[in-house]
Image (cartoon, rainbow, N blue to C red; front, side):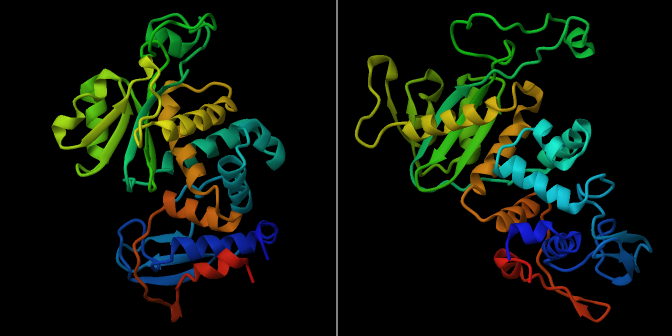
Length: 326
């Protein structure tokens, strides 16, 4: 049984969600205590619990983005797959789910706010390059946000000469790609040497080799203990032996296409969309059910401990759900 069998039943979605959330055992999301007992049922396949320490009740959805949501778990799982897997727009999702565009937009924003995968582990040599994307507040002359910023709305016109900048609504995104695995996308309000080196130093170990282009902000990397080589694009040099940034340029092309389907985003929300893009990249080669499991793990990280609750052992056999709901 596959993804269609999963989303055909709210009960099957509840089983999958409970298995992933409580894979380390049930605990109170309010005080962290594991002195828990069952407290009846809660909707389709979900359960309610009572904490003996703080004497509060909670259910399987408490403390997650699914709590107090108008969308059912079936709709949430469809939203995750269609947005992060198939790159559907929010308006298209509202048509498919038969929900208002604002409901879907709020759900997508809650989802993107939780998409943080922590530190990326790079393997092998690392390529670093920067990309400039149009991500500004266009707005209208009477827009409240435009008035607060104290400037005119951005207009579509001829391309501005030179590099982009945060103030001109074309912020930089640093792309880091490990040739042996790992990739990261970091928005930055500055491309000066101090900002670029800080981004690289926080994410890449000193003993790794870094390949860049000849942008002046990268020239100080060799003084920080990195093996740094670069190609000079202005002189027509694109590849010199193992030195090139072709993988970064490949990711930049994919990122531009992915951002273009959203028809313009605000630079204040750029980081949220980049986190969503990284999640898409991680789950692109997995089956739909496993992709949803990984997304739930990402948005809600639980420690691994197993214990008894009302004579029932909650042990999540995630391999069962990877093959389908039996």
